[in-house]
Length: 314
Image (cartoon, rainbow, N blue to C red):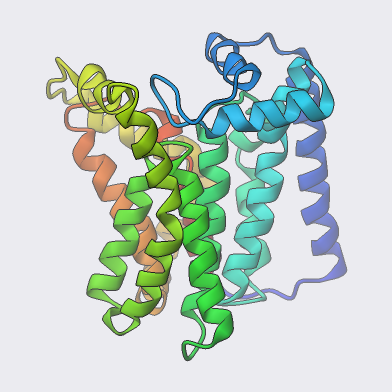
């Protein structure tokens, strides 16, 4: 896509979309009945711990902070999810600006315009996962654009590691983001292995906390996520089709049309920004393989799909 001058009217459009969608989410969060999953996670906030039966503890910590800071109400425990698209869009803007300051706002605008970011207010384990994953990716982008390993680069690698460690304490799908990093450094940026090492060391406290908790609780997280919920899964032709429909809904027909129309430019973007290519293609391929036997839930890819808008914007 060709760059456009970010005029005052464009700034106004950006903040109008962000503000209006925020108001709609606030209204929905205060009126929509609480779901079963939210009621379950609510008690994690009442009794915060280092881990729980089926997932790591981060969403419980978020809810605990809301309960202590804003009181016991439906809108307060949902506030992190209500604010999440606004924060994600700003972080996406900041991350992409390391590559192109003119086009970065378009990534945020396209992201903010997607329907799910206007209506989703449910607090789930995906809420912190999406936040920490986006922060980790943005910091890694800023580390990678540094021409040499200076002080700022080391700080960005370390922060990227801290944030992916927090993502691991949110949900195990953070492992897919880690796999994307591994592929990138193994195939594209072998000379930056020291940066990867700093990232991994900074991330270790997250998995260490999870490992420590599971060792004392019969490995219930592992049993549930690896074995219990995957028994009896068989191939079905409809499953890959549903996976494709999930992406079509999340990206919207308009963005898909832009991608098809500018497919040559899109390939050039991936050629210029190989980190972005890895961050998109590795998760897409991972879940495509998984979709041969499992139905891929829409929420499974929520921490990765914002990067699609970066590719279209660039």
